[in-house]
Image (cartoon, rainbow, N blue to C red; front, side, top):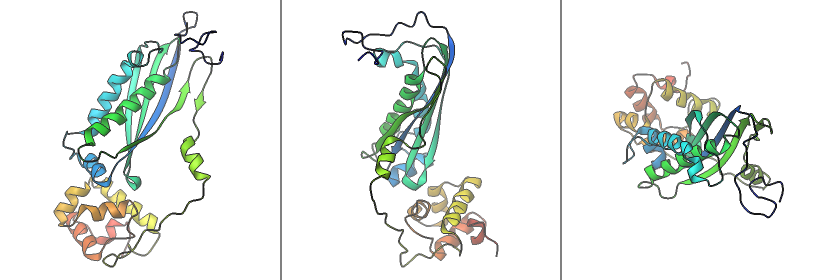
Length: 258
């Protein structure tokens, strides 16, 4: 019980006395992942959520929450934050958004809880913003990534969360993407490279799937199905329509020469 600093010798909860510690620079990063449905993910990426800009709201909520960490978690010390930043990493292959929060301070105790609180509340805000479309969204992998400063020194988390490492030890099978009757494989080559080239084409041209699909007169689900690996390729007529809408050649979609 003595290893838990928030418990005294009698096992009672307490706030740790840090008055004798020196002020030092502290930094911590934390992450959270929220897995969405295909429609909810598309709404977030295209700015089509009923409540507005999801990621902008989540960023502000995370920053505000970090400032109030000591009010939310009883035994935390109030800290003067010198920096709090939140970044979002869309993971199209599983319709997820990875949240990374970074907190900095110069204080007598660490800033890990502020980073974790920011990531947690940002994830909850994303859920609140999309729940009208997807009540089954799942928040997972809330964890500390790194910390520096203080007596305990630096910490770097393993590359995969414990839950993923445990799952990796279990035997599993994975369904292969199907090629449907109306589909054709992307131009001959590495399917993964073709898919990545298609994704890069969208990024460099700043193409939103729903807008691009609407201009081309095709279903956005066909784009998302290909990007996420659910289908092996695009139907020839779909690829041609998308290329025409983007004023490009079909080969350009996959970074291939004639």
